[in-house]
Amino acid sequence: MFVSPIPALADLVLAARGVVSVQTSGTPFFAMNTLAFTDMDRQGLGGRWTLRGYNQDRFVGPVAVVGNVELRWTFVAFDFLRQNFGLAAVPFLDVGRVFDRVGDLSLADWKRGAGAGVHLAWNKATIIAFDYGLSTEGRDFYMAFGQQF
Image (cartoon, rainbow, N blue to C red; front, side, top):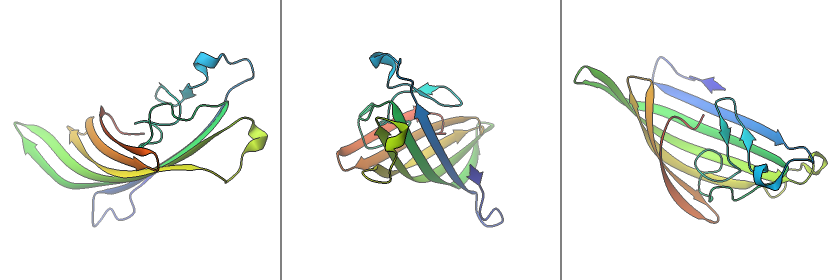
């Protein structure tokens, strides 16, 4: 979901995503960390693409649920060498949890990661993201091409 709450005042986008992934009982252990996203498969909960602030694949299970919210504010846009650039401040909140069965879904013991980043947009198609995530287990710095979602 992408919403521009005040387009007349600021280049601001509220972005949110929710994912539920359920593996069948025949899934081999080495594929248990695969989450099917619309753009490409991602690895288990934790790391740049799911729960920032936790180690990659920190949480793996047959049922995985993740939610991400970002506020993307492009605070400056400029042209340089006939190329268009924009800088965005991006605070975020990630939540997720794994379960053994669909029937175990609950609101207890969810893991949270939060932080902020600066994203450089180049010609509005190439995004270079620098994010810093914090969790109860640590903190991580991420640099990647593309938006979180």
